[in-house]
Length: 196
Image 1 (tube, helix red, strand yellow):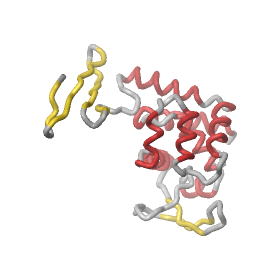
Image 2 (tube, rainbow, N blue to C red):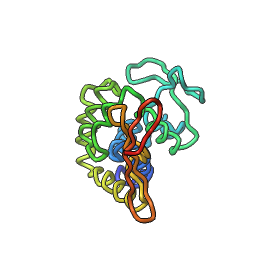
Image 3 (cartoon, rainbow, N blue to C red):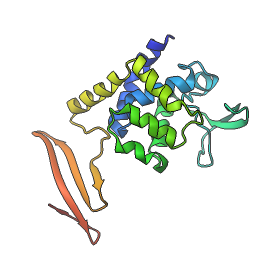
């Protein structure tokens, strides 16, 4: 499969993750391509692990032993499908150590790349710049825009957040209605929420 075919094949998976979680589709696609050698790595081809995710202590699923990029034997996660791998990658990026990524929009792949690297996703000091350069060269940022358009067409907010917390005191609740978008500001006090 050519690199371009790889991006086209998995673009919708990445777009769906952007809509669901707010992670740029371009980031998901390029990390997937970079970590799996465009699907040709042994972990991707035989174990559906497209992001080189190690098992870690919390993983209860199947594993395979492989030598990591530091020539050290490690247990890596085994997934039942590509979709499961992509979904799990999104959940990894939802962990608190990556929270600074969410200070940036789902179309700001440059800052996402920098924050992912800063949070320790990869040991390669040039990882963020590699992601940024490859996203630009392959014009993967177009999928970030496609995600916004698809979310709009579905009446969804990107990140599909029904509620977003502001300063731990107020929530802006946004939902699609038959007549368009409805926003309600709620204030919390004494464990209760009141409409503004």
